[in-house]
Amino acid sequence: MPRVVFAHGWGFDKTLWVDTIKRFKFNDYYLLDFGYTGNRDIVSICQTEPLIGIGHSLGFAWLLQNLESPVCLISISGFDCFFKIYDSRDIEKMRRNLIRNKQAQMRVFHKRAGTKLTSLPSFEEQYLIEGLEHLQDLGF
Image (cartoon, rainbow, N blue to C red; front, side):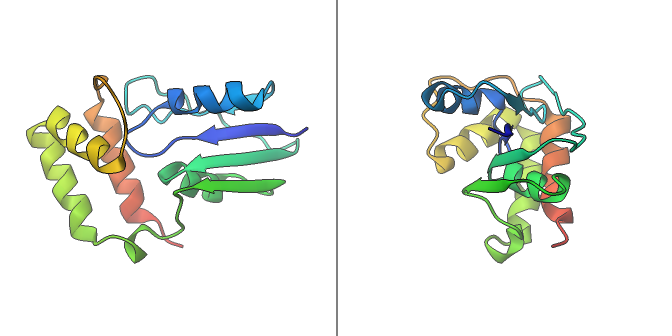
């Protein structure tokens, strides 16, 4: 079976995939982490082997841009153009709210996303803002 590359969405981290990996008994995988909770780990994927990409939200957009010829891509709440779904002013509002009160903004985001977190992790403002900029820069 090809190696699986997991990419989480904005405001999440690689722990999003723990239950999925256990349930499907994946043994050979990459867990990308974009650093929103401080544990940034983005491997440089040299595609010399067959890969399956599984992405959530912004993570799916990352896979679309960074995997050259995957065996397949699986999207969970993914998109190819964020602004076909949301107004660009929403991103700017989130950026302002992050700067004002990062934890409050992330609480609102996770509640809106339907996340059942009992407590929020500590978030890294720099990487969250970088992720929002990536949303704005999606050019496809």
